[in-house]
Image 1 (cartoon, rainbow, N blue to C red):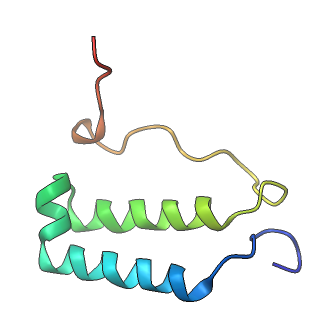
Image 2 (image 1 turned 180 degrees about the horizontal axis):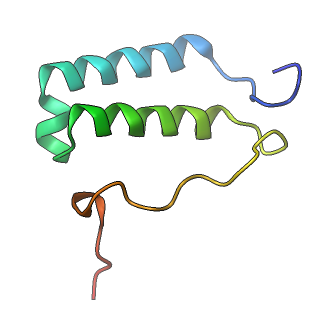
Length: 78
């Protein structure tokens, strides 16, 4: 935070979000609802955390936009 890479936010809340997500992956609930593998789910969680915690000034690159697998692709409504 001092270097401006991460923005200030409630660390207790962020930790609880991570804990709840890990529990949901391990129980299978999140995997069933999303169709992701555990590896993909944890990778997405990591991306969300890094993108969400990064300050605009400290962000070195934009968030990844390429889907990890065909299952992740979402088609636009027609």
